[in-house]
Length: 427
Length: 199
Image 1: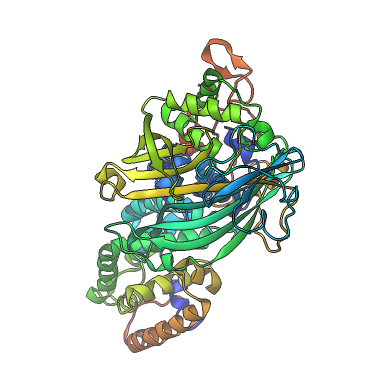
Image 2: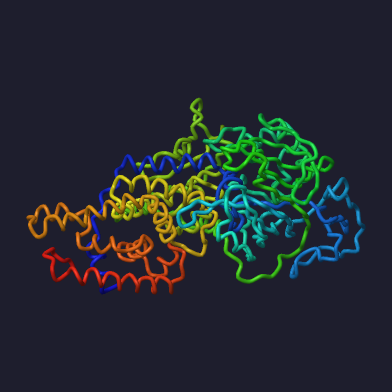
């Protein structure tokens, strides 16, 4: 940079210090937003769009066969959901566990695996869940905020035991407009496909993060137990009922649970305050199911299940409060279908898949906070505390305060210390 | 849920990793704030003054948080992204910026060469030299966004391109146009001004 621009660099005004109160207030606002939007929010409300790895904003998709007339074939103990079309079970590179000459066991268009046709993936195998999704995207244009509905096809391979990493394939579909919101330019750039690696269960990480089949199989198989499970995972600042309902969606979305857990989950979800049951609600593939819905910030969020098998079919988000949802009442802001779930032996061979660094963070040695050499405040990262917060084993008697390294509920706001400690309390 | 410190245990984690993790653990986004809020504040304050900058920074991180799902995970450093958002949010304060620039430009014009050194320092410490302010006022807001990212931050042209979401080639060509404009204004003023010239 020389010439005409150099004087501007040299003459750069001095910056006033960032007032501590303002900084703290800004940080608090951010954390309040973070707490309020835990998970659900980035599915329905805000941004998302380009899901990276398993964190892809909307983790949608799901399971279920059916959409296009899927049949379930049982071979050698392994059940594969097979599309009625001549399409292969898995994408090229993946090897189906069994030959497709299996016995067709089911063809209920609505219901994926039915009784007797459950999937029984073994350790080392992968569950492939295919889905189509539509969620709200929010973008910042040059000056204006834009919102639209972005749509994708997703295929996610997860190791049945969670030990190995998996893959996520996302393909764009043409976007849709939200009434009153013009489609932004970037919405037109939907034609792309991406591969993302997804990490398996990270060593040392709490089981709470696991969504693999083996782990899900260990969840309570009765309503009361499942209900407790839904509530014990509640994050700090969210109302417990909101969090419990969110947990339901997180458990079924792009995962496969054994039938007992599916049913328990369905029954437990029905008991969450605010949940409304609706019959004959359609997913994006047109399949009807029974929906458990809840009003989330002006949008009725419905999780749709097959009434016979309790398989998750998809979800639907419909505006009920135009003001809160910033769209006319009745507008559908989310619509998905989990089209098929199958078991495969191998991951497809792909190159250039995006990395998932989730486990890297955990494997790194804890680094002491650097002495922030400047005002950038690079430092002050939390020290590692592998606290499993869901079930506080060691608590300090009546205070309920964990005795071990002191993660506290409020941590969200101790900005002045520059230390970020978030513990999620148990109750 | 796992506590954040169990998830984030070192400052060696790059922004991209933190942001990716914040999709599941939203509170982790505070780390991004802790790392970059001061820098964004400084940039916003230089452009708009301290008070508007406070609002801008608060807004920037909310916007960033809401859009974290779109963060390009191949970018380990979130600053270009944040500068881009800061630029966008600051653009909502264009009128304030314009006023500020005008004021800074007038200070020199009103009292050409007649102020004592101390007042010069006081005036200029947190302000742009009048002649530069005048030159700045001849640029379009888009050109100003570009020039100030290049001049006032340590972003590379590639980073600036990313921040403004334009191709690097466009950064260069626009910058060329900016130079031509500045040469005209600065060049014309220079010989006749008594203002001190830095650099």
